[in-house]
Amino acid sequence: MPATWPTDAPPAFHVMAKPSGAICNLDCTYCFFLSKELLYPGDRFRMADEMLEAYIRQTIESHRGPEVVLAFQGGEPTLMGVDFFERAVAYAQSCTRPNQTVQFTIQTNGVLLNERWAQFFRDNHFLVGLSVDGPADMHDAYRLDKQGRGTFDRVREAANLLRRYEVDVNVLCTVNAANADFPLEVYRFFRDELGIRFMQFIPIVERATAVTLSIANRGWGEGNTKRPLYRNEGTHVTERSVRPEQWGHFMSRIFDEWVRRDVGDVYVMQFEYALASWAGEEPALCLFKETCGTALALEHNGDLYSCDHYVDPEHKLGNIATSHMVDLVASPQQVAFGRAKKETLPPQCLRCDVRFACHGECPRNRFVRTKEGDEGLNYLCEGYYAFFHHIDREMKIMAQLLRSGRPVPDIAAIVRAHDEERFRGVGRNDVCPCGSGVKFKSCHGRPAT
Ligand code: SF4
Ligand code: SF4
Image 1: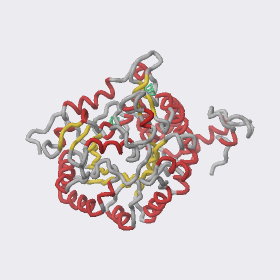
Image 2 (image 1 turned 45 degrees about the vertical axis):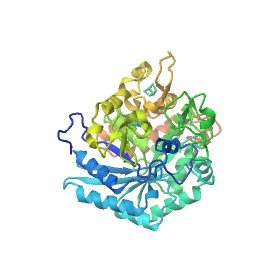
Image 3 (image 1 turned 90 degrees about the horizontal axis):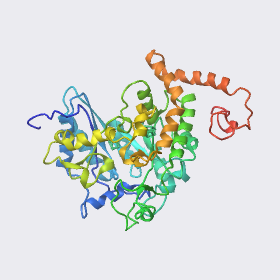
Image 4 (image 1 turned 135 degrees about the vertical axis):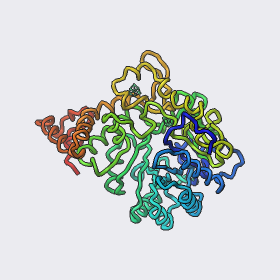
């Protein structure tokens, strides 16, 4: 424990541990995290038990509040084996204070999961993030193994296994060039075929410079021997990246379906956080907060970085073997990192009427110029602006339902009544008045499934 508690220490924060570093058993083409192994040449990328204990003990010690999250990500954390996580659980139990509860989370590609893993996750109430990009053709576009084969069948098996064992699963779906034009196919696949109740969508934005673009387009796996260490540099994006307007359209179409039939049954991360913003609360996710700096990344050897998206030498805060985690989290470097999210917004964001929900999203994506020529606008701005305006009316109603103590799922009946009014007299083959650009029969005139 530090001799003096740092004054800038937040009461709670999130440290994502990467016990196998950036090492993964897959070679997903868009995964620039794979290139981070270049930071530690010749390393074995295995977190030692002493480091695991330091991570757990210091995270628990650093939290003033009752809830502590211990998070494992990669690379692929299941490469460490179940025994490693059994030791983690046992150690956490030995140092949790009586007023604290610990929630374990793990993000996995699912390929190594078997009955033993599923049993272990269930017994220890792990929240399992499973990476799936949609139905087979979309998932297999970029989520490949080391031999270049698709991984859909293996991931689907993992999803079924976890479901059988009643493990809490949160699907993490990247939105990229292969699936961005098929929002409802993706959403319905998760909801209806995999039976998923928690999902989040992550836009793929792979930055590159004019020099690195052609190399980056070949992907970030081991097969690309020329890949550089990924940094948030350059104003180009790879051909796999989602386009801003595609991103807005993707989220808006899913929202339209969700708000009419799934509120209360299906949890989509972006919608939950948006509702928090409309209700006047701070969303739980760094992307949509005014400032950040409380979501850090811990490498296998104890190096602590400002954020998982800034694992590079400039953003290394120190090592938890020699400095207590809370001192690093509260360090001037990290506090400045978190404040920069707010302080570097361009004038367009400062004037924006949906800034309360967007806050310029993540600084890693702020690399385009505004119409006035100011630097630092988010590449996805057009999409976010369209999405937040698209959901405004329903969000206001849901926030009002919350305030008046009524069930939020009541929104479905309200929206359907409004639809009847709005779409009265529209022909099946007319263009839908909602602005989607597609025929009414394929859009709001489609029968509910
Ligand atoms: S929608 Fe665009 S202008 Fe508005 S806050 Fe977000 S990034 Fe800035
Ligand atoms: S840099 Fe982006 S991902 Fe990292 S903590 Fe800030 S908002 Fe979150």
